Image (tube, rainbow over all chains, first blue to last red; front, side, top):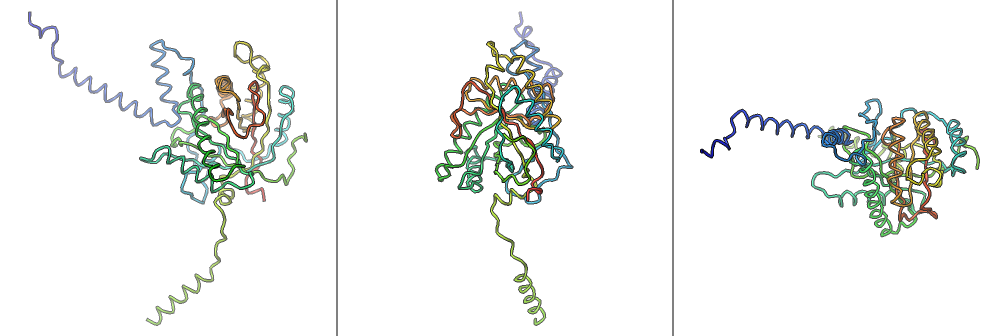
Length: 235
Length: 145
């Protein structure tokens, strides 16, 4: 018996088909990873997992409202060296009365609420650029925080980490990463005698499919005096 | 040559007369930029026992509470931060956040989760509570001053 009969060499068509499958899979995966929100990739992974009857509870997709870059939303005129993120709020109108009504409703369930003084907020994204490591990104973030921090503690920082995909497990992981980043940045602030500055952390799902997901976003909040007296109920 | 000298001297003079931009700090420039907006936030602290049952799932009270909040988040464009004080509660907070986003189709950045474990600014945190910070946009930064 000829051994070649059981292990026949692949025909040219078989090889070409194999190459075509490999190339199309690579292109498909490449296209999926372009989605910065991670929505497309996790969608494909979920479909694959369901076909293989794998566990899906932790990787259940959280439906996200992925934002595309809005042409109508103008970028700030002043161009810093880092990209600034804009908070996704469409209408710029005062809805304090409605908010106060909501608070009354929520307080029936939750008890007393603590109303903060008004504050200004802006956010700054820090991206890992080229070969720079995460440490360089954090150094950049720390320098920025030192430059805008005020000595009397009226500046509050929030270190936000963005989950790599819209799943529960990625979100939980992201809260842990945000905590680690917060600890490291807070340590650097203390090294520079900014003991009064408060730093918190948070994790959220990146809302933009076609905007680079930052390594970390720093939200800066500065308390301002309540000049116009909002119509929130006094407590 | 004389004409060129005069033009050069005039340009130096005009540069000298040009108002020097006032020195502002980076922070001030950022606050004055279009990116800065004025917000107001409200913090509610609810005991976990009122929203989580023995099996670790959302109670009926908790469900109605977060449904109400999610609906109003859409109409008022609110953002909500769920702060837990123990890492064990993080999955529960993620489940609540996911459910709110699923039911009200919120924008991703409207909900965030914070694990306040070991935070330096914590004020007597209770492991058995969930802090909800609701933030409302008041007006643009230009209206402040």
